[in-house]
Length: 234
Image: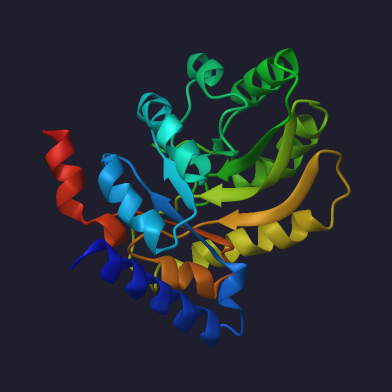
């Protein structure tokens, strides 16, 4: 299927999932995950209506940044970010979704203040509490947010998660727990923190994520196809 066909299918599924949950599809943002996707194919998705992209790696993101800006799309860094790579993207991306530790938040804050910008970020939550994954443990999240809220160079816009790789129905309790955390933290009055976005759900489970309250879904394979990813890895 073409990228256009894939895009229309995703949009239709988003509408179905939102309708079933009693939500408006307009409250859910589709992030086109462009890892290992060449600019010409990304342009096809943008022409269909994709206006927000997500990149996993800093090197690939910076190589595409001029293209993204020329097309007027919002740029999100969604992959793991090393502290020594922050300098390459600070103030150049609209959102860093993967703030998963205090040292990273401190470096973003330091460089943002140095460059006279305020960087929008999201806190990555290790919702499955998996040892091999990054992210803040759910029980540690309130305390972590209090520390980050004191940083002048950061605005926290919400939460992000990558749940355990289980089936679409089995993943729903993790998404539901994320929604509970998100809604609870909305009631906290912390400076520089506003719970506006809940980023969860990928190609295999975005309909479940929408059902459980996601405001952002990150879709790559379902939009661009798995073969493109595999070809770039070899």
